[in-house]
Image (cartoon, rainbow, N blue to C red; front, side, top):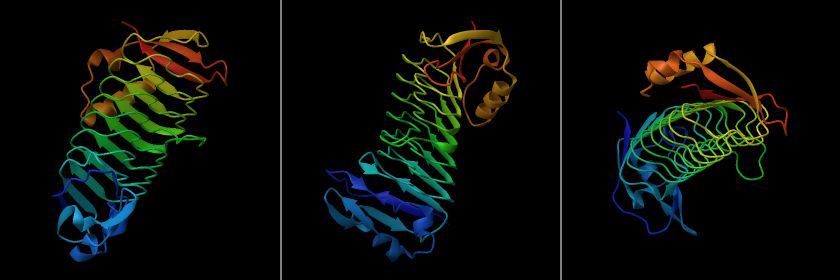
Length: 269
């Protein structure tokens, strides 16, 4: 039996609820979950003030309702599963090390910042800074997977060090900016200045993409590793045409203002 949380009261100010986390609730009773302390604007409140609770602490948390004003769901989780039927707010899964978060709706900014393991799946759209480093920090995602089946905004994978980010729709500007390593795959259109300042890693675009003048054309080839990545994404619900799986890609090396060991792969039509 999973723990079920049903949003019964909308807040007019943001809520911070890092306690919605299998690590935090898996040994709690129903009343213990209701008494969990949350941040309500500049004050504190209890989870039960906004959610009805059914069941007791388990490894799976099922949330129903529009949680767009709720921040930090699944923050720091290391195991278990969180399923949200509705929208979610900022900082979803920040710093998570394991487990899985599934959102059947849209997500706000900062999905999975600085996560090091686990998987986040957004079946709608996401905001800015997906899988990014917080301002002033040297590295963003250090492992795990983030799958956005809709669109994402600017700075996807900023300062990412390891892992995989896939965007099923379009991505905004500065995709993979300051990328350290890892892979970012965008199945739709990509905004300007992709890979600016990247040191290593791979950015893949299936559409015509602006290439910065600090990138150098290397070759046109069929990257074998990408075939395995795309088959993996297909198994996880992404619609990927065979021509992308079997096709050739232009490889651009960059960014030359850094180590010049990263790559931008653009599907050759």
